[in-house]
Length: 441
Image (cartoon, rainbow, N blue to C red; front, side, top):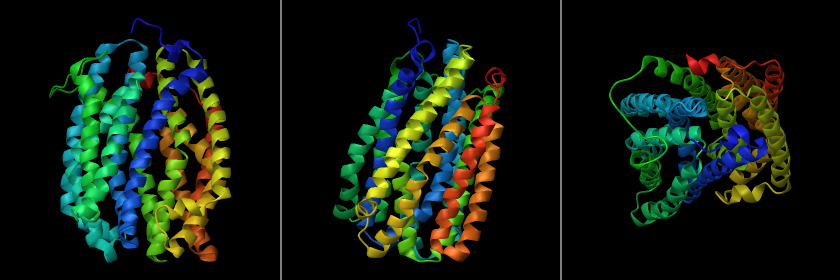
């Protein structure tokens, strides 16, 4: 803590890149992790791909809650770290661990009791056995998943993101070899993919946890006592983010339900494009994640103008990246789909979906960056309201456009909702004032 903090005192673009590049690498590795899973699941059957696509919204709810906790943790740690208040940092970590325990117990109980009914409701009736085979091992690994997000939040808040990258390198190497081993050698089928994920993530979490237990700038200290004020702060920062993600999962489930009427090939194409889109726009997600740390640490140091300037720098970088990525996809969309499934129908539908997405990459980038900016400045109500607006628009536009354009109209509705929200976000940010008091009380 005695050396100069480049995030607060250095060149903004360099600071943003230094934080974002390891985060980007981690996100690329995380997305590769899922793409490898999709690749091997595609070798099983189209129904298997459809089953994973259907299960994902329910899994996404846990990921959303864990990410919400991680985001709240990172924001509070970044602000306290910027103020050099290490006692507050330790308190925030301890309380996050307590929340993580209760979250894990709650999700596992709900999953084992009501998982089958929820999956049928989402649309997995025709491939329920495959969906459950994938979902049940995931439930076993729930505590590991939650702990990994908590550890990532700690490292991200301190701006030491290389540890996260290293953990994902190990997870990807293990997953790459375990997937085919469990699927084809052990003959576990789709459940083998899920078990490979659990085991790989366990080793990755140990890499994140060990330096915190052993020795670092801060020490990991966990006790059964909790601080209500810190719990409220974590909830204030984390709950809106989790709410946003869960709301997105609900709207995605609605889209899956609409697309399921057109058959497994369309649903499989949706699942492949959804994951591909997430992978392709990762450079933007990396910068937007790093932006939260830059904003929070500068607010902690009282450098408000510097925090606002970082948003516009990130926006310029995001727009330029999205234009380049969009042109690459539009030039040749089908080869990306064929990597995961060669079914002619899946390739045809997937190519159309992916091309449309590429045309909207600029809006996807802007919406993601403004969302991070609002989080960094403590404008959590804005994040929640705009998420509700986007979900309502997504559902309404998908329903309306489905009538004249059939399945492609559903995809139009999804993309147009993002474009409209990104425009609204821009004008809101111009009028935005920082909400520093939420970090203090």
